[in-house]
Length: 228
Image (spheres, rainbow, N blue to C red):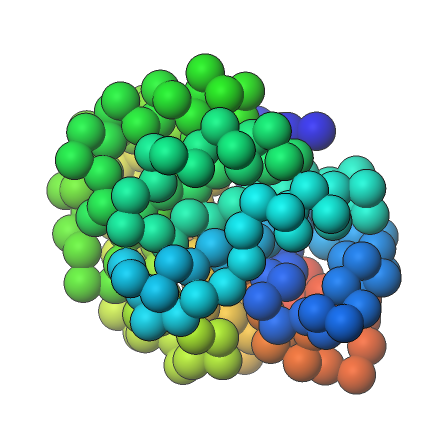
């Protein structure tokens, strides 16, 4: 199951719970539980080189695939994503997102993802300029803007990201490009509306979903906060 095109859901708030904050001893059930209200499942893949943390790989993606019908969004925070793309696609990823900072030939990498049968995402860190993705916008299904420095969950949202989202969405509108804008880091009920109104429509939520007593209600609260 692929992510629905932006044109079909541009007025909706899409929530992608990050399993980085889930209970790894009960991962399948944690994913099954949130799938009734979530829109994608976000998998943070970290290699301990590009980011200062080491997380999960292809075997975990393969293991969780039977627990949800939602698209699985694999965010590759690795020094070189190219050797892993086919493996994650075969394991069950529907969307593979790579960092512009790690790809010497970004256009070639996006083609590799597409040829593996997955939707394409490109991500940039908070201090990386939008110019890093300007020439690839017509090749992607999603641009992910990190709103914290990647590596760990539970960080505070970097406020300058909101203007960055606004500028990216305007750039897309001017060029007639319809792609999702996803934001990852520090999103909660207190700021999601402002970020949504700036032009983002997909939100990675880790501790703000799995850190709550009722993760399903937490997803509903995030969506409702954009309607107030």
